[in-house]
Length: 339
Ligand code: IMP
Image 1 (tube, protein in one colour):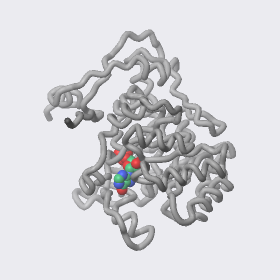
Image 2 (cartoon, helix red, strand yellow; image 1 turned 180 degrees about the vertical axis):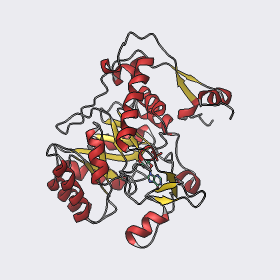
Image 3 (cartoon, helix red, strand yellow; image 1 turned 90 degrees about the vertical axis):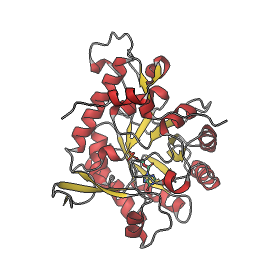
Image 4 (tube, protein in one colour; image 1 turned 60 degrees about the horizontal axis):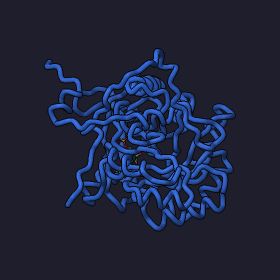
């Protein structure tokens, strides 16, 4: 029979006894084998309406990391990495590559420019091309952090870990701007994928990616076994994100574009045509600064750990006690005052 899967909104964490008196007693840092630990285990997604040097810098200053997207020339992408390290000599950023064409040359140039890690960025990561690319990158760059993905299942996770990935992006079809499930009928709710992949014997880091819309979802992902999370929409619409502030067609309010990298709009802008249509382009309201968003994320995650009485992400995972909520429970769980 078909098995049932769970989404973030299907579950809640039971509050547990806590003796944590201050959020600063909680350590959510993550060693990522790059020389510097992440203080906030959050990655900004490799998307052209999220990542540029400015965003990468703000993200780094919050203790997180950005992954510079690959939808530009090698020179442009390497320039962004150099700009980030100019902003502060010890700053770290990751950079994405594909699996065909010039990807090895791109990786080489990005590492030469100072990238702290390379992300093999493919929608369907449980694929022979991704396995081969990760294997070749690992052979050529034995000490570099290699992030790879995306996968939805434990067998996909195991394959990439075995090929040499340091971290693996887990989540297929869950992104806020993603239409993969509509177009292809494939995917697994990201929360379920995290639960499944967390049972892997491999020790690659698990990065929950796609559909994370709140710090509550982040805390659920960590409790389910994620080591880090990746976000697009939560950083979209911030002044630091690439793109102009425009007026909404609807009411003239200030908005910015946020779009999937597999959307026709993104592909046409990058290479003049599109081959897949698995993403959408939308406008989102102009937000406060990305620095403020990241500050709130940091606070929210720490509060979340405190509700489970956990001082570290590892402790949260060990102690986590999930319940499944009904649709009435899910309604009660979001703000629901009548206006
Ligand atoms: P969000 O945080 O829910 O907005 O999801 C961001 C994630 O969506 C990214 O990290 C990618 O994994 C994924 N993504 C980006 N562009 C596309 C697309 O065009 N189609 C499907 N998924 C996408």
